[in-house]
Image (tube, rainbow, N blue to C red; front, side):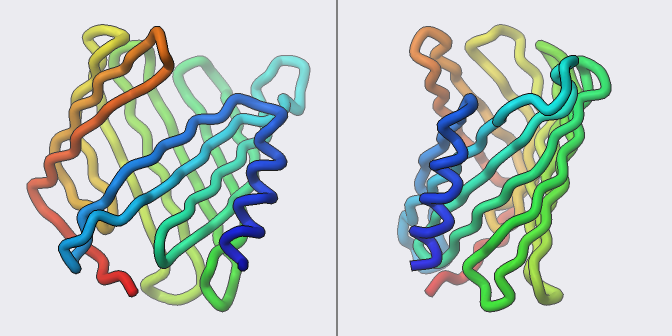
Length: 177
């Protein structure tokens, strides 16, 4: 029930902005492909210059769900900083997140970190990518529970879809219920 409530709240807020929806399958330690749904959204701008915006994020997996809301600040066109807080499907319920994006049309670095209650309740994803064209991106990625390695991404600009592949050189799979 908590998962559904979090998803409904975040989706309701997402109506006012631009959303990115990511649906993929993760290969788990139990040798299953587990569906994973992520929704990220920029909401309304809070200042006339458009440097401060509301952000939303929701994630739904088989054994985990979270919903976050916060603010992003863009001090320059090559830098964005974000802070969010929200709920998770852990008994303590709270979750905090921070993010940094640095880049331009060709090269970009992004990292996102999250922390909930407990010493092992944390997560991160960092990417360093190069885009020789609008259709193709390649680079390095480190993603807790998924590994560290190379990623390739094809962007279908016309339809707004992206297809990606991550080849971890190291892997740290999480056991699921």
